[in-house]
Amino acid sequence: MSAQHYVVRTTLVLLLLLLAGASQAAAGVTSLLLNSEPGDYIGQGQLLVFTDAAGAFLATSGGEGNVVNISFNTPTFSHWWHVNFAAPNTEPLAVGTYNGAVRAPFRGPGQPGLDVFGDGRGCNTLTGRFTVLELVLGGAGEVVSFRASFEQHCEGATPALRGEVRYNANVPLQLTSPSFVTALENQLASFDVTAAAQGGGHVSFSASNLPLGSSFVDNNNNNTGTFSWTPVNSQAGTYTIAVQGTSGVSVETIYVRVTVIPTPPPNDEIADAVAVTGIPFTHVQQTANATTAPDDPFCYGSKGSVWFVYTPALSGRVEFNTIGSSYDTTLSAYTGTHGNLSQLACNWNGSQSRIRFEANAGTTYYIMVGAPFWGTPGSLTLHALEAPPPFTMQITLNPFNWVDPSTGGVLVSGTAICSAPSFVSVSGAIRQVRAGHEIRGFFSTSVPCDGTTAWQAPVYSFGNDLFSGRGAALFNAGSADIALSASAYDPIEGTYVYRNAAATVRLRGGR
Image 1: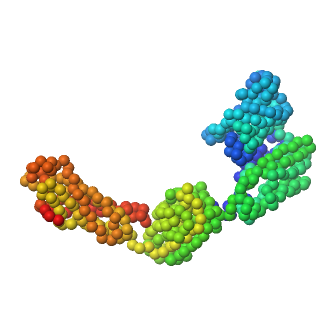
Image 2: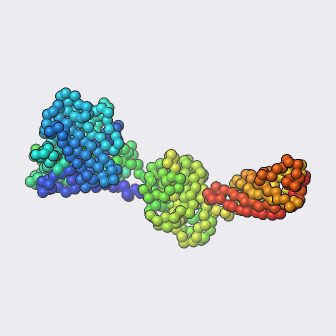
Image 3: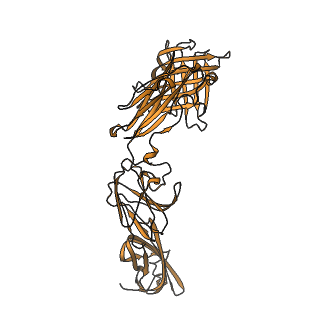
């Protein structure tokens, strides 16, 4: 991806509610916030924010108000979460703070219960605390409105899962901001937090967990605050910033996760491809910080992809290779436009990947260099040069072949001619008619081929009784018909070349 796409690229998922105002507060707010520390098994270190616009919430109570359960799932069940709260013993759950909570289904006498689980992960044992901020039950025990914050530690681990769940809750003070911000090293990143209080009161801001070198400013009278930061080279990573708003007795906290990534190379995205200005051409660069765009095409992987563009003035056969690179490269060529590319060539051969194709004058070709998913991008050297002619292979049969009259054994031989190093596979059949009796056999062999290479293959019987003593059933000196097919793999183009040959040959009883 290109650098300009990262300069304060924010995902505007609102942490609490998209719009603020007294009328919306009266309607009730429904949402789930999960702020997981690194190492927490349940939340996997993520910041997750869900509102009723993203899926379905269900609130139930049990035990005559002793337990409240809130569940959420997206329409496709890509996310599903459950948050359970229980008062000690058989007491009804009430507004207040509950310390010393354990896993709700297994709480003992005097212990409050808590259980936050979902997306396929749950605790066997847990410790934690929660605060019920709002709880209204209907006459039949149904949950009319509910709001609670919580802190959970799974299996006695130190990392915490913190969060807040709201179901049709009254929220007198609402904060709005992006949930996630992606920033580049050495480039300014900023975002605003806005607030609205019931009755239009003034909201003051403060922030904590600020990364070194960053700042958060309360903009005083307009109920907004601004975060600003230019991270340096050593600050790549993920940071969770807590911003607190206060209006009278109302206090709310919103979380924003800022992810800092190293600055990718300038040709990280196809729109910023480096131009190949002519042939020959050599380009050297570092790709360690290159990224993979979601729409990058596939060629044995596209990890850490970088792009080049070539529009030749004259038609001709061209080669691109990565000889001299320090890592396992993939190399591919495309025509078309971004989002609608057609692949012409694809090769993966360690640090020496190579592709060749016919380039037409005036046609634009895009070249992508990447790495397989297990690779580690590093120092790339890309060469463009005039390519040799396409790989060719020819196969021939010798007019005279050897037969052992005593056993009927035959050796078929010939020549393979390859324009570049390859491996040729040959297979075929032989037929001979003697005294009105048809004798058949087959043969196959493989040989390395570079230039002109001789090959030979023994013939195997198609059920002929070669040792019965009946001479008419044995191959013998004389003419025979042979038909064969041959294939050779072109490692540069990644394709096979196929050839056929047929001839009437003479079998001789001596080599």
